[in-house]
Image (tube, rainbow, N blue to C red):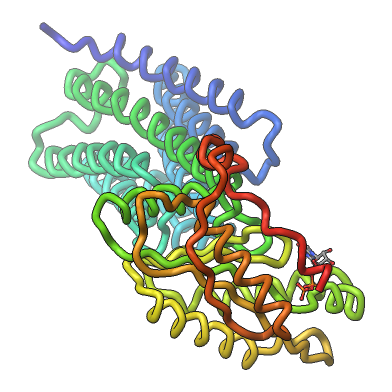
Length: 411
Ligand SMILES: Nc1nc2c(ncn2[C@@H]2O[C@H](COP(=O)(O)OP(=O)(O)OP(=O)(O)O)[C@@H](O)[C@H]2O)c(=O)[nH]1
């Protein structure tokens, strides 16, 4: 089987253009600063470089050399820009832009020294690809998902191909005078390039899809104000933790925490101040829990904490620590320091077969009510509750977790 370079070249150019078109289609409706637009432009520059190289017979040599090589360098800069935009970095350093000057300079000054020109240009592209790979492998960027590995693999292939080409040119293994699409030495290069352009585009699109999915999941499961699990998520977590504790015979404790007189904060300082207080209390609570504990926003100014493998005594110690921590951390709001306290209901210890997520929450909630009745800024213990069976039959995670009763307002 022979690799017909001219046919492969045509396929490569058409596929590049097609990819650019589909990426534009996907980016349509997004702001121009979106990473997908940068990727579409990169593919257009990539295709332009192939079109220019393909027109060798029709263009003056210098135009063909400078135009084709620079367009290729531009496409790599735009790919880097797309990756950086994806990571939320807008500005590219001057070093990243340097190839846009270097490549034409090399083509002009070394127009008559084809081997040196091919070697140096290939090394500049290797440097550019290295920068893209370094950005993709940046450990400070956790948002790439698995798509990054497709990209890194494809870019690594391109990098090796360019290195092989530079070495072959150095050792006189390829004819560097003939860069036309029909040059036999370019057949494998075009085939690898074709696989690479398909893979990097697939990888980039997959990366953006993965992130969109992650964001949707977060929107569904996270409370946007505090960043904690929302009611649905913490309800799901409690249901599965109760089942595990029953299966493994472990302790499990649950805390219901409610900010005291929160309405007064809103009334005195405004809703925005109330939001800031909510965030600050959420952070104070979360930062004092262990890694295996979970906390979520259960309602307006109410939180639910799940403490797996924790006895009642342990839960009481923690609840007291949380109460003290919130009391000791007033929220700064402009010139004001808003003092906040919380009341806590605790239901903890051994789990029986009749316990459910609902019964634990109801018990902790009853204790919370007593804490409010007893003067607030205190911790109360809840007792085992057996809820009417209608409660247990309710579907898991929906309304199973009965809303904290609204007795606070009666207090
Ligand atoms: N700023 C802000 N306020 C909220 C939010 N969700 C609920 N609230 C407010 O929280 C207040 C809760 O008031 P109440 O249920 O009377 O409770 P409280 O004033 O804390 O009184 P006690 O719980 O009895 O100490 C109401 O004013 C709600 O409007 C929110 O996301 N942001």
